[in-house]
Length: 218
Image 1 (spheres, rainbow, N blue to C red):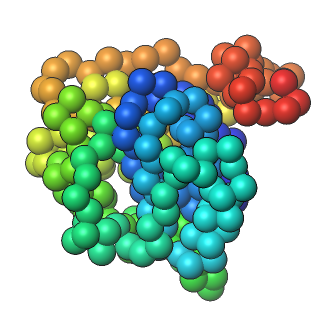
Image 2 (image 1 turned 45 degrees about the horizontal axis):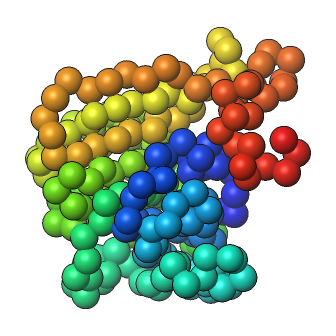
């Protein structure tokens, strides 16, 4: 579970430039944390439960130009919650999202895709405790799970501020939502949708502009 297009798009879209502290929950091999480091001066904490992924994330952090601002905790969010004393301007996560679908024989893949070790309630509870008063939580989720989390978030005093729907292409499949939550109760903004490709399978201009700092092919 290394790098996927929607996760890259998420990392490029989140407005991290002015953040002073960022937490990446379920960092995997460190993609979102590294993308945030490239576009900000923030101190970045990452959490990853799966041992092999955490080891690779740490290698990636140490090899990057931002190693002094990147810190990794290997373990569950629940254990990290017991020792954490920091608050964060931004909490970002592309969490494991499948709630009840059939699981793979591959345990690492199950941890990456299924909300076995990180129920949404735990993610929201942690955010309620450690998000800075004017901070924001940014999540990347499929359509059904985005609805579940939005309905659940208010129980933790977190309210949807903005939703961006991601489509494979014009007239294509709606595959993900980027969701922004904070402590302010207001009417959420439905931002313009993002389309990854044109019908001719070329990347759209919006996608190119967002990913240009990261994709060598652009």
